[in-house]
Length: 117
Image (cartoon, rainbow, N blue to C red; front, side):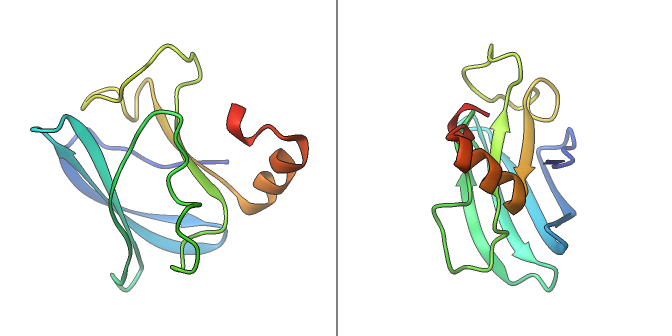
């Protein structure tokens, strides 16, 4: 499991290695809609996924096969299960954006517990 680094700025870019491949994440706070969005690119800035709304406990990347995305799963996770909505300040603090590696997804899928992470 990899925790995606999160900064306290309304817009920022972060390079992260997932399953041995480098990806570039761009995060933006939408003040009008009151949500964070995420864009993923390869290290050469080729967009793989754009403008995905980050929602609590929702898998973010597995519904987009064939785009060059990492093979695992990405979830905004609140370990205390007390947060119902992600805010500008709780993502990266109370709520973590985590990547579950492909090997970990296989283990969780075999046990039927990916939805309970």
